[in-house]
Image (tube, rainbow, N blue to C red):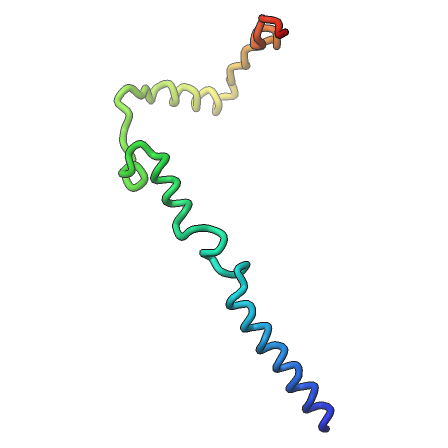
Length: 97
């Protein structure tokens, strides 16, 4: 019986100690690896107008009929084939040296 009690208290002590380590371990602290709200701050720096993240804005020169025609062709199975381009047409014609 005494052996069982020793094992129980030893196990409880180990669990208690390891639980305390998890609270101070930098691996489990959110602010140790990333600054608080770092993704949000980076996004705000990259956006031209920060209000666009909350409310979108329309584009005056957008032609919606072009998109409608593309969707109609997709549904009808009349998809335009892509233009065939050779690598020589795209690559730089100058020789390096």
